[in-house]
Length: 366
Image (tube, rainbow, N blue to C red; front, top):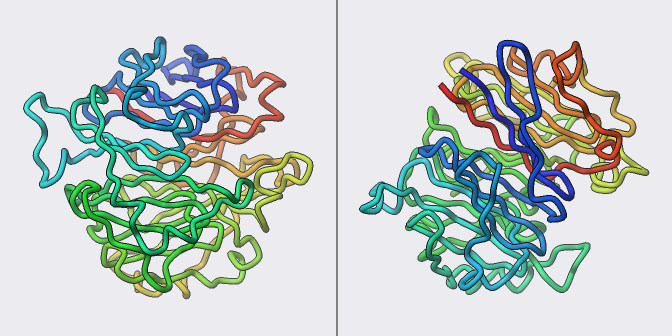
């Protein structure tokens, strides 16, 4: 088995691969673009999609060695902020005649597209923009517009898809984007990362600028974590859940957005939370204990907020990337190792020390 990491830096996409001898950098691609999001196709091991700011949507069928620009005739904006590939097929769970899963794309200005033929053609799901809350969507650095920051295809319900409008709303569709349900009272306002887990139908996890939230009923209602540590570091960005244990979660956090995203003020941390699904009261997140994780991670000062991901096929395997490098945990986030240490063969060039990674995707090859 080997693990592949695809990382969106500020102006290129990096690809790394593990082997018995350690890690190696395979290539750097899409130079000169501004990658924002990456998604592997779970049923096609060499296929991935990348959304860029100003360069539109790209697709690779050889693990990022070459890319093709797609969707230019239909996707109206070149600012593609989010992309997701369903692991369950299309609406109702059915795949197309050619066996393709649904691909979703979100842009700035806010628009939502879907493809059922591997990106060959696209349909705009215009009803998203008719939601009542849409008049209040506004991204603070560019207040005249808004965008789709994250798309999560539910891992247990075909056709269920959740869309996070950054600094706007968390909304959902049950039919692949044809019709939409607006945000609910008490839910997250500024979701940066949203996740579902195949072992807990109905559970949604949200790392947001306004804190940490969970839902246990497909987003109909939400509970917010109010522990002291997350009140101190209340601005969350990254989120990852153990592939084998939906009760083990890591998040990346800062006190506020400037510390998270600007190098001159950078200060960020990673927290871990775990509980027994059998013994604990999973519906009371206010009582859960978040622990600051530092073993093997860089010091908070000078570290931009981390992008996090879990290995989809290996229990306890987490990855984090920030301006300091790439870090791996094999014990569910308790301890970490920078993968360019100990002669792993990975160099982290000085130019990346000032860059803010935007996305991280993980694939495990058998």
